[in-house]
Length: 481
Image (spheres, one colour):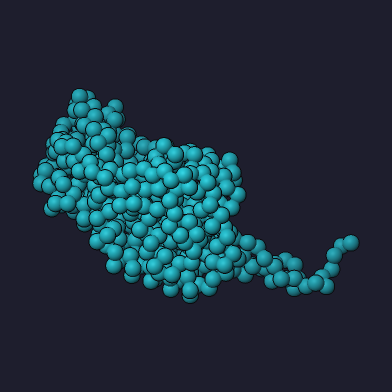
């Protein structure tokens, strides 16, 4: 499949004709061949978005909403095409791909609903005869940099609210799934989005730093949002800071699932199984640390290990729960984490085997802080179980990480769970639910090394608009001189 750039409504090859190949991680066959954008192409995309901004920013909310709602329906209709691309480009399973499309369509609908919620306020002024207002208006060109792991959800999220707010956008597609990301733009084009409002850049992996730096530096780019690793997020933040451009960063995670001594154990096992192993653990909200009170740990671990051991793993085209990891390197890292932990005293209680890019659902019990899996984001199906003595130690371990995206607490005492949740350093906390959960209207984002800013619903309006102070005054007012 050949993937073109989208610039000013037109499919274009790279200016110098270069392409790069994305290989199916499971079959090792060609998944897609995409245009490898040059710096000239990146500049052309920004210029197109900048030119379209004047008209799009003045387009009424009803028209913007209608296009986004139509796009949602079109996206739903293309679920088979999205699924094929996701399986081939990323090794995802069909259920994960189907969920991506369903949720991304809902993101478009939520963004459409927000077009009439971009409101301001009247602010009392001390100056007689003055009407003072706080008014939100579109910021300009927004650069969206999206990842491969939930490709339809996260790329749609990166552009939907900017467009709903009257901005124009450039989607810098992930090198791992250029076809999947490009199809999102096709959806919006078919829905009637005017030329230039959304432009898509695909680039060869080795060109990414140069392309991103040029896009951020372009004077017309006014906002940047990035979802990806904390390592790259820090580079994005530094570059945006140098150019004084606001950035929304949703970065890595090491989500704790805290199971207190009064938890519903079966409920916690269900949540841990789903949160740890959905999409092979390649989700920013994945349960990355299972923190369980020692008084119930034996019972909990036995039940969780039994469940994990029964999860089928293999060819993502088959009837499996765990498909392929994104690359062979990612799969080999899982073996390294297992070897390091077991060498230092951890007990392998489920899984542990790798076949190519497929790794079984794996649990390591009795994990301690000197093991790599305690602190590193695995981004795979190898999960540590950490036994603690009491609530205070559970909270300390939950916060003993550079990350702070999602978290969860299990307890039958809701007041107790609320108190624990309040002390966990994370942007998101679910009580008696899994760490993996999102809804289009919720304020989604993290703290600490997981970034800053919020996607979702009304919270995102503040990220993608400028708040201006505008007054209407008496021209005959008195001046002191």
